[in-house]
Image (cartoon, rainbow, N blue to C red; front, side, top):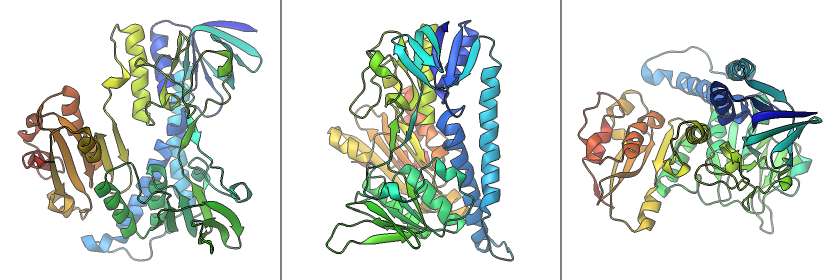
Length: 458
């Protein structure tokens, strides 16, 4: 059966439902198709559930430190994974149900369950039905990458998604991958009571960041009792009486890490391999992501790619911004584009990392004249008062234009405080706008003007 729509949206991640809502308001007849979980990764197995678990882990950590604050808790602190999982499932479930009800309540939108594949450039098949539209938007996201390691297919392992189903605290969790996903899970489960070992192929964690950031993040996690095995080579896995053995060296006498459970967190791959894109002229980059222009148009006229699948951002906030860009160009006569976006993201360990714009390394490599200010969190009153003095504030400024180039706040409330700098960057105003501002005491943000008043040549 052939069904005609004004627009078809494939996938219900962060950007797809929002775009469906806007198209519904504009009176377009829309089909939005989902093969698995309404709301995509973030709502179901990503941001929402993992940050709910970060919250539980933070409570456990503070409970163990209660005596430092003069609070006496009698008895041992123990994580009940069944209760933690139930809380996580409730919070994530509410988000899932909320998005589902929203879509089902749209007068001009049909929510269709099934796997969509292109059969021609402007038509997709779903369970025997063919849907056709002049506008098609691809929002199918990405999934955990499964590496081709020897023995991995012969041992049980978790991905970031299946880790959401754990109901017991692993005795010894080995995490392969020392970037954002792996490090967040490392601290979560260490604080729940697991022994945790992080295995990373590079010589530092979050390898693409500045040396001082990587070093400080590793020190924070080591202070929690997490072990690191860096420069891991010839990775492989095998079954072991205790659970699983992961080879981390390739010397004559192979060196292994032995654990009860294994989490593989080595990146993500786009869900483009089973969309039938060969029936279109849509181009992919070498990593399988859909190539798009500044307005998120693919090489096939009338087809857009939004969210993680386009490789132009790997975050919920960039996905939502993709929706805003497409909607602004389609309906508002507002030529918004991807290159207007300033890089920003967080690492939600405790204390968290907020990162915006360029790194120190990138600024140095650019050759421009620059200024930098840096202050350790040990010199921030709010951090001392709350017993959270790990980390630092670092801000980079263009010496000629006086515009902020980038910043890192690793420390108490760093993921929130960094936005005061991000907003000035978007306004393209000189750093003096914020360096002369009066901020509330005692907060982390009050030290941002102080750091900017102490800039020195990079």
